[in-house]
Image 1 (cartoon, helix red, strand yellow):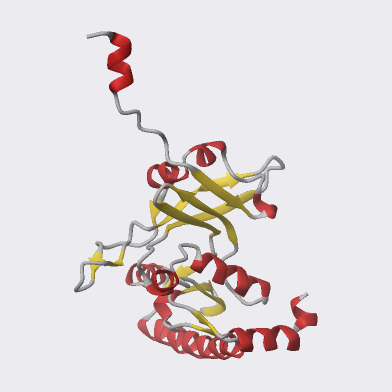
Image 2 (cartoon, rainbow, N blue to C red):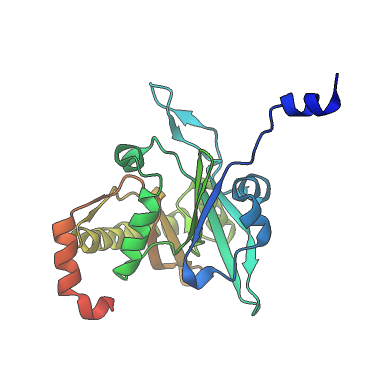
Length: 236
């Protein structure tokens, strides 16, 4: 067989188009390896933040996927400043993301929350690569309210009573936070497992609570606009 004809008849698989949007404050942090193939970088360099197995609903759709959220290697800019980074592979069928048909729905929610000076992870970049979508955000310092994290507290000398006291404190602070968000027209589920807790380990108290996982969040635009007007000076 003629070699040129053979090569012509082969199916050449082209690389999926990469659409990468980077927030202006983070352009110097993005490594070339990530830019060249974000999904491969995510899969090969990232470490799962959650333990467990993939869970599906009665229709076979993915409900929980511990492989979808990964801690990425620390990024460093030219000035030597370091950035702790988390990547999330978007489940386009889940929550408001699926309802809206917008794979970057959660990313937009985070940007909205950030613009109101309310607590959330800082959005860094969003990626569309073929059929895959990633959102990249700055890692929130603290711990998740999961069994393995609570065990670490016990290793540091926390008693069951200490942990129960923290839980009550966390629930009270979470309730106050919920009121602030709902005043801004931002509605979501408020569960300890969906928060990151910055804890004063020696003092056994909570410094700050940061909500994560925004894919089920809804926004009342009228209330949001009124909130912006009311707190415009503080927001700016």
